[in-house]
Length: 116
Image (cartoon, rainbow, N blue to C red; front, top):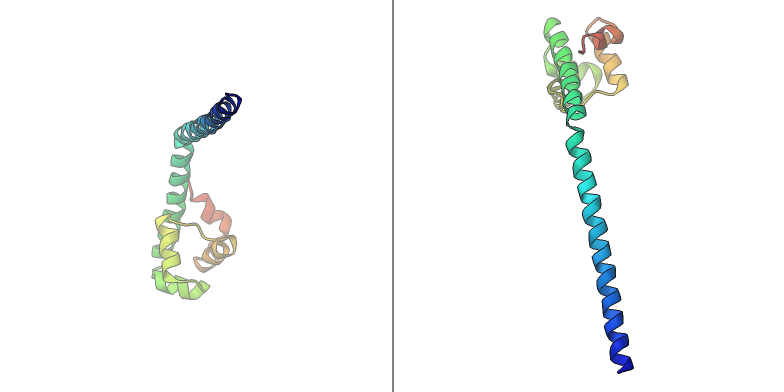
């Protein structure tokens, strides 16, 4: 009788431990989802700024009558990189941003001022 009670108690403790872990995981998932939902405005603002930088890069490239391939060869990156910068998929590094501004004949500060 003593052994079966010990086994029953041990099983109950394991069950409670698993239940506690599941509850903690559910709470963490709910917190993460709430944080994601409330960060919508931040994500939209970042998308707008990124898109605006891409638009500024494209506007300067077309103003200078340059192709993406020419820009890429001039600063030593791939044409796909220039395309990603202009579409807002990624951002140029600081050194590439400086090189782009130099290529377009404007200061980096003026290039960034065009960003909303």
